[in-house]
Image 1: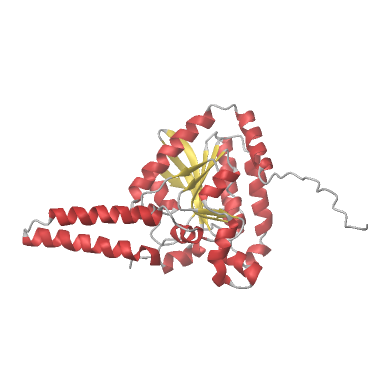
Image 2: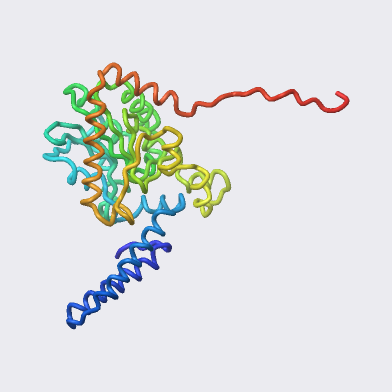
Length: 328
């Protein structure tokens, strides 16, 4: 069953009418081409009206669409000859993160990213896309391997956060996230990170240190999810939409803040409407930015990477005038 958001219902109803009219024309052989054209133009106008004015909370919901392409989908769409590698060599293989070696336009690259499930069975196997510490240890192992063999790293990020269970904390969840951030900062290979859907908390930050940070048009990226933010601020998760607006988590804001480098546009209506088109778009952006950062000497690239993250969150202090009360 397809997911239809409330704000999409007028468009979906119109699209259903268009399909019915096409079927009627084919079956009955009656010419309603003018009426069909008018309806198609109306649908196109409605699409632009809806999707070009989404609220931050609507953007979050778009990023969570169950038919949105996953990391595995993009691996198949963008890379050739992918070989998945397993395990952290310490505890187990965490299926919530996939990683391995693929070929991008003739060049070997390392690809890593969280993987969500499509149905209940797959979601359970992949822990609903919430990585354990061993998932991040696997990612770090593959990144170090990439450095050893001089392969660029592509991190595809779509995760609401790292798994918050007590067993994850017992196995060092916080420490391994910190280790990933530290190690990625100094890896002597080009790194491109792309937030394809959700980019939440340390789960995203752990594999989010790169030379270029790109973000899909209907994705979000924040230190916390809107629901958790609402719970902390107001003890009320139903105010998630309000929290989403306050967090400034959409690509437009993050580009202004200098946290990301570019926004990858999606097909009108979202990436889930056309997987192939989204794959081609991702491929074009990867080609452009890999070509750009390959030209930079590796020591300079690492220095730039460190500098860009040190500059995030910069602020200025200004002394206020001395406002003395009358009679003081």
